[in-house]
Length: 185
Ligand code: NI
Image (cartoon, rainbow, N blue to C red; front, side, top):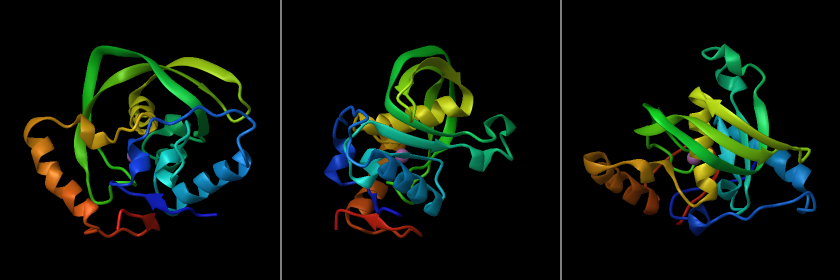
């Protein structure tokens, strides 16, 4: 089932998300709904707060970009209770990001290229690994959502000033997108 995507201005996007365990109600169905929603909106990652639920659950599909990044062929993964434990700050890069919750906004964001993450997979097996490259960027973007952050929070200076107007338009409902949303108004 395709769920509406909560857009900027919805309070849930600013909440600290709670951990879940295997007893979370109808978890398999929720995960399937998140996959359906991600596919319908042609995104690569979706965090539960973006469908209105303040819980630490993320799905990432990098298979859709595997033509450009062959190393991600078949990468469709569920991340439960993920945390970024360490940032390797020796190298950072800048790349343009967008977000299903911020339709129409695309801005370059500077992030560390390598991080250590812990999480549980769909079967609640524990993982602790270093991740780099594009996946590390997508994880930082998605896991930020679980701490009430969106990618424009990382902008500084003039870019931050310029994006304020676009965010204001989002708050006023002045935007269009091809997928189902739940906006502030
Ligand atoms: Ni996002």
